[in-house]
Length: 444
Image 1: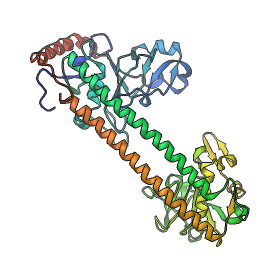
Image 2: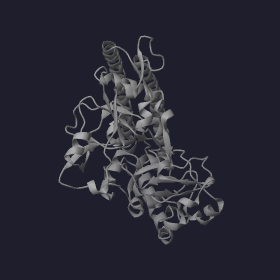
Image 3: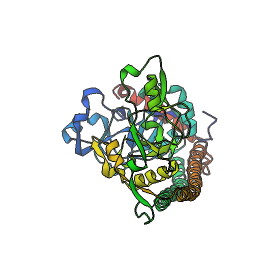
Image 4: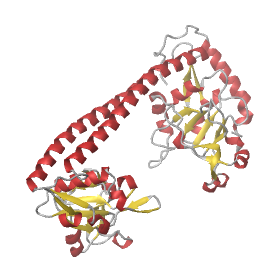
């Protein structure tokens, strides 16, 4: 920790915990709280999904009153500091809101109940600050699932000013964040309008809803050939002819992601059958209903690649521009035309090749296809520029939030109190509190 402002003290989280039993706790493990214990209503379970950067997210899970009474040692009250122990960004903290009602924390979530002279919103802000997160990196274990254990979180050092200064810093943070919140609402609104504009551009250009009379009213089967990819099985996990292939995770709307391309063993005949050519359009065969049929064109990257049976391949006839086919399929995606042909199993919708072939496919003259594609592409590029500006605005907002917290932690956010003896009194109070809690710390 850098040099503290005059009047501040450096304390650990356990130093500032309340003296009551189990002022620090994590959630119940094992059979005490299992999936079958969840109910549709009742006391709340605070999970990782609820703990945002300074914000409690109202993602609801419940247990019965009886189960809550059994787990009261893990209860959450308004004003408790909640800390996420698992995730890419650690520590991550917020304060339990006043409207929460009866609740407990789940495993991988920690609950801190603080002394009366400590503002929980200040502590949450400090835990979310760049300085504390940087200092905590050495305490994080795991690569795929970064985690901090309760013992290490209890020992985290934070700077603490007197309570009056804590309150003023919290008020200043909230004022700054309120302006950023308003800006982010405007950015989200702009994002929604851009999405609506993109849908309008795609639908108007393809005229899938009201094709002109001089166009040919056809189906997908009339416009090209349709095929499913090769099914991946355990026997293909290794072999002498490993070939790369694309799957659902690689296909996004008008974009192929080649960062995670997998491989499987194929015979020469299979390779020739399932190898992609420039201009092939790939669509998701199985996906969440709203993303069913999400299409992209293969344009030679990644090179020499096949596709799996979680995708449908459309190969256009000579009188069909593949870019036109992509535009038509994007229109069907946005207007949820593919959803009407779907078959849903659990939460995944499926678009069979047979049903896909029967979907309408308007065919204008080839030169008109190309002109409409070029015009739509130009307008969509304008939307992409607007979307990039919105994304840049979000990044600037995140940077400003970190800057506000960094300034708060260094004492630069507000004019500071001039009581130079406050720091020593805070340390004395922390030491007294630590001794008083020594007998109960192990229980928590």
